[in-house]
Length: 170
Image (cartoon, rainbow, N blue to C red; front, side, top):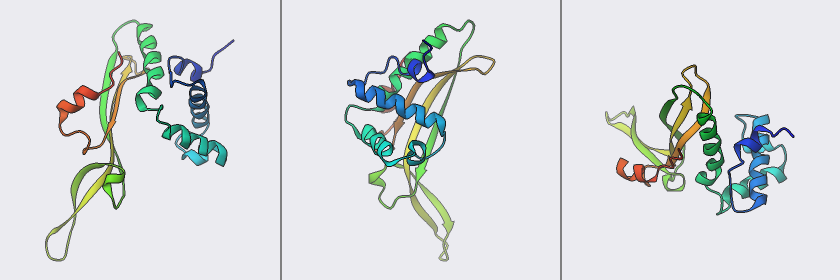
């Protein structure tokens, strides 16, 4: 029997409950059908959308546990590849407009337009930062993520703290 890409990608994922593992698979399949869409649009009905939000708010579900299956699948693809492997890495900011930065996270303060009195308008940028490492072949074939970390500035003050907490899996 042929396994779907979701089965292969989540084979090593263990969220501590078979129902949570199945829900992750169902969510990935729905998101595959509608990439880039919001959760309500991807899941098409309120019951599946609510189930997705319950899944994401479950205390047994974390970024590390969700990604562990993908990291294991990436490692298998890397081991099956002959020749050099390139690891590309990047940090990306996800910015959101919020009146209260404590509710979503603080990324940085910035200066906006010049006000009438000559001073610059200052504002807070809220959101998250993500640093990922992607393994590829020299021909550009992506093999998968090898590390990923999400954080906000208020959680990590300095790179030494970040280095101790990145979830490197290879």
